[in-house]
Image (cartoon, rainbow, N blue to C red; front, side):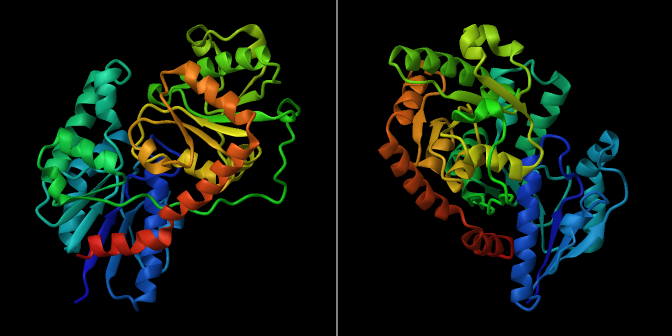
Length: 381
């Protein structure tokens, strides 16, 4: 018997807010579920609740796009939708199941629902950086997240780490939580895959981070400073460091302890809007460095593997699980060890080749072809 699935994408706007990963996952999921529905002769009904900003992405074959009124970029509209508005729309549509890809369900909804929890990073901030977000916002986000987990009929999360973290925060939730790893989209490179920046011509380490504390930009810079001095001491020409995601060294300079000489070899790229440009920068790097403290999944190291760049990564949270033995795992707080790993990898081409080979095998675990049946069976169960 045909079932009706509604996916609440009204609050998603590409490139806005802190939900870039959630937007991309929802976009891919809708596209693949729609294609699967077409292949099955429109076996089920899939309705996407969207807005004028995301219509071009979410109005795809195999699904019905339902434009909802209001501006999702307006904070009041956004909040009222999340708390109450979506319930009214759902009552009219009468779905068999609704998917909330941002993880927040309305205050009152009595139908079958599934929330998608990527991570519990807001709770990490509450514990480790309580002043980073205002207290009212922190209270709202964390309590809404926990209440949604408690109230949801089903929960999907993207790693065993996140599943265990959810259970730790909301005891008893594990029995209704299923882990489905994220799917990796193919990387798309432009015709010209060369890097033309003169500062990068002698070889470089590429690091992806941001100004958010959990991305650990200071640890990347401190590790590089130690690496730079050790490389010189051992007669090895240091690679430059390309830092993607920040555009100002000043906030980190003192904490990182960078010498003026080492700092002169650091190139800051800021946020790279075009994914193809980001791929070119990573593909041409000798080493990819990622030192995040917490991730629900961890796309950047896997994208580096797709681009045949050997990876040095933090061993925290989901990263050990997702990377396995396909990268060199390090304690992100042990900057001397990170420096040693960078230098060792730079001077051992055989190890680089082995990691590239392992990376190519590792990424096959995350193909969308194997994700779609898992989502289909879960959402139309």
